[in-house]
Image (cartoon, rainbow, N blue to C red; front, side, top):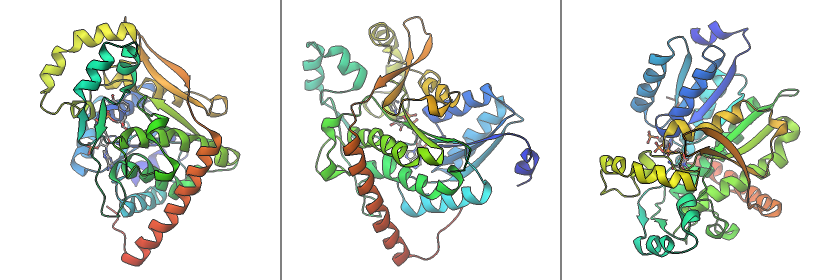
Length: 352
Ligand SMILES: NC(=O)c1ccc[n+]([C@@H]2O[C@H](COP(=O)([O-])OP(=O)(O)OC[C@H]3O[C@@H](n4cnc5c(N)ncnc54)[C@H](OP(=O)(O)O)[C@@H]3O)[C@@H](O)[C@H]2O)c1
């Protein structure tokens, strides 16, 4: 790659962002390039090649000299993640930052009754800030690999990616950072170590995000000594295609009409960040920190004040070290199983 050769010898940081084709992931890339237009090599890992190309073109329009490459990766597919990781290892001999941001909340159901119950209760602010109180449920599907789709897309695809990229993430004497886009909708009550894929419940999204919080803790336990650090962020409530999907019958312009109400709510809860730019605040803030100084039990929350000022707030996560270890062991076990199945079913992985 001639572009890589151009960067050879310079102290550039290599950053891979999953789900960079839209929303918070794309806004993060834009902000990273504005922060340091020359010193970064950005790799956008996206499932849809055309959307990835459009994202790259948009980034290059505002940062023409930036180094931005693409890799096709569908985090809901075992073979796609493994193929993409091979390609990334072929291109780069080290990765400084891995943003684990791709995520879905398909077929969401908005429980109007639970919403109105929350509206007239003392939990109103928490409900708006976290989407808790059972107001959001989803219908999950099973992937071609036989895994629950939300678990696979949001969590396990990323776990496999980290495991595959280990050789370029762990370097003696240097640090690398994993940065998760979790959610304040990550509720321990939605997660069970006996059903890590959430086959049996109605809140697979919340379960998958809580599992990200737990996994981040376990990754710190296992990888810090190899220079690899993991942190969790929450972007706040952001208007993206994911949020528009909550009320599919509600056209985007009606959401725009609700903006004055949202600005009012923002005065009560600074987690109503609303724009992808604001939502990417904590993700960018972490990029500027020394990983050793970060709290492995904190969720770094993007926040926007009533006057529109962005800042990052650490919040203690409700995570337990023992449970994080149990989850980690189960994910390692599942990794062995899916790789065995993959090796049996096909010997050639397509690298696009
Ligand atoms: N918006 C919020 O209020 C909010 C709150 C808390 C957490 N989050 C989290 O923020 C992250 C980004 O979401 P967003 O709000 O920015 O929504 P978005 O605009 O829908 O972005 C989601 C990104 O993930 C990608 N993606 C989805 N499934 C994928 C797959 N199987 N393989 C690879 N990429 C995939 C999408 O790709 P396509 O372009 O191909 O669809 C897109 O780039 C998610 O993890 C979400 O859970 C969002």
